[in-house]
Image (cartoon, rainbow, N blue to C red; front, side):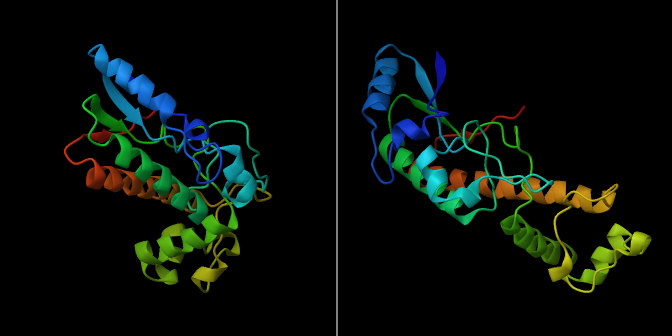
Length: 214
């Protein structure tokens, strides 16, 4: 009586920048409604289309070893990337405007399996975002030094601008820094979830919004 629809469909919904094809999805949703099946409609933001990555290669995540992933799988997203955030907001808005009051719509399914298979990106955009998160969380670099125990191995920082993500190092990375980076990565994904959620609540009021996890 309920099916999930459209979760990985961004390339079909927006086959080229600013060009949209909702005809196939109209037919699917109308057919389900005709037969009494309700729809859990997914936003397709877990899998941007290839044209997006060719325009914005910096939206592909970077590993701790400094390797940038390539297009061709799911979940290859830098959640700090401004281009990704803008494109995700746009396609979510388009979907909500078209289907927000459809009688078959039971709920919204945002993104898909946040953090899988990429739970964190280590690019320069994330580094800048991480520093802002640290400033908000700790307020002073002295508090960061205290929390991370940076007296060990001469890791003490004089200002936030000296701090990078816990990228690959010759031996073990500071475990407190690594833990904070996981917290930061979780925060960035939550920010993007809330961005989409708020769009859906605004344009499709009263319809529940959720996501799913591994």
